[in-house]
Image (cartoon, rainbow, N blue to C red; front, side, top):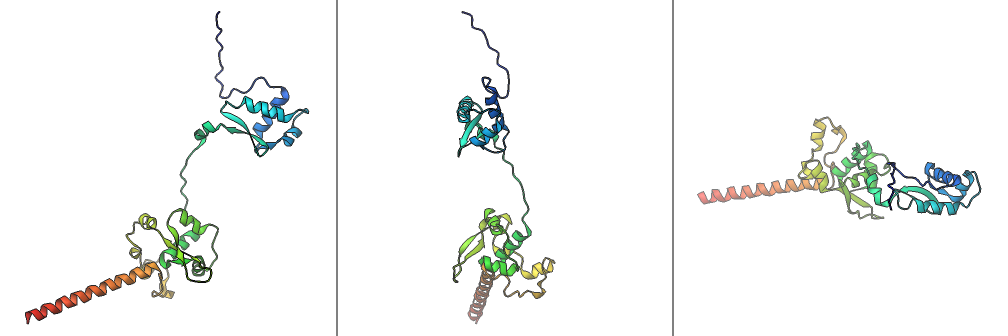
Length: 233
């Protein structure tokens, strides 16, 4: 017996070819729809009265082994890419977005006044928080919760992270420019800023620690010098 070779057409998608006209209507309606359709909606669009659910089950079977499947979710029908091929449809693209002015101002306040609460940030900025402003900084992992303040309601305090230091190439927060340096560079108007309270959180404490280290260093030098003078006598 000679087997006859059947030539297959090189179509992108081999649609079912054994459908009635009304079945093709249902297929086209679902394919063209911008959202999943329920059975009642499909019934109102076709030219004949027919058991729509039965047709949908038939189409679902026809498409079950194809790249496109007919699926029913919450009683609504739509064509979807086969789960086995979904990874081919994923396109990853890195989009760089500039931080908003509100986010930059919020970051600056946290940097120089940490740990600081939302209410304190709003008070310093003079305006209420925008939508997701601090959440954006947390997604970048530049800011994180740093405990709660001992006040009624125990509000969350925010501090900067090691990733913030790494991103801006800082060894520690005290490497940041001081209020006088920012003023000299023309970045802020420091005529009305009290440098004694500028940077009142971790940044300020680090500056104080530096001063203490200098004091101890001076005392050590003074004692060493005094002992040397007594030996000479």
